[in-house]
Amino acid sequence: RKEVEQDPGPFNVPEGATVAFNCTYSNSASQSFFWYRQDCRKEPKLLMSVYSSGNEDGRFTAQLNRASQYISLLIRDSKLSDSATYLCVVNIVSNTGKLIFGQGTTLQVKP
Amino acid sequence: SQTIHQWPATLVQPVGSPLSLECTVEGTSNPNLYWYRQAAGRGLQLLFYSVGIGQISSEVPQNLSASRPQDRQFILSSKKLLLSDSGFYLCAWRPGYGYGYTFGSGTRLTVV
Image (cartoon, rainbow over all chains, first blue to last red; front, side):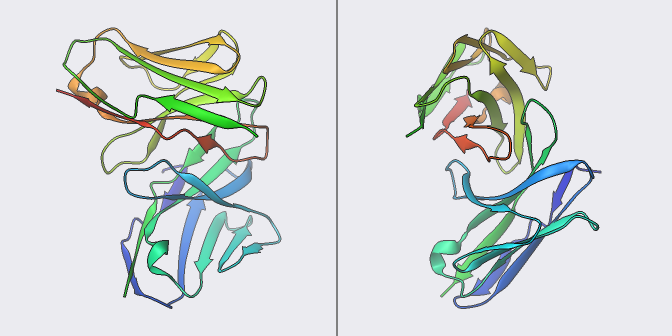
C-alpha cells in the first residue's frame, strides 16, 4: 500500500464548477499535511497547509479527517488557470522533515 | 527573504558522462535540504536529504551521490550517468517542522 494515495484523474470540469479531490495516507503518526500545485514541467508550489479544523483560502478549502486518515481539497468556481496537478503531501513525525508526496491528481478546467 | 537557486535548468548528457547539479539557499541558516527526482509521468521520489553540513542520508540506492560542503549548498553528482537517470531533478528546503518545502525551479536532465 502506498503511503499517500490519490486518484490520478484526470478530472475534466467546466469553468465555474466545484471539484473535490481526496487523498488517503497510511501512517497514523502523520502530523503535517499540505496540498501542492504543479504546473506542467514546473516545480511543485505550496498551495496550502491543511489543519485539523479545516481551512479556507479564497476558493480553496482543505479538510483533514484523522480518524479516517484522509485529506480533501475543494475548489469552488473553477478557473481555467486552476488546470494543474494537485499533490497531496504528508509529513510523518521525524527529525528529518521528510515529506511524502502522492502521485497527484490532474485537473483540467474547460471553457 | 529566503530564496532557493538551482542550476542548470536543462541538461543533455551522454550515457557514461559525469553529472553535477548545484542548489543553494539564501536568507536562512542550517536548513534541511532535499533532492527529489520526478521521472516523466511519475511522482516525486526522494533521493537524498541533509540536516547539516556533511550529513547526507540516501533514500534510494542508485547511481547518484550527494554532498553538502557548505551550510546552504547541496550538490547532486554522478560519476557515470545511465539512461534511467533522466528526469526532473528538484532541490527543496524547509524552514522548520510544520512547514512545507520550497522547491527550486528544477533541472530537466536527459541522458542520451
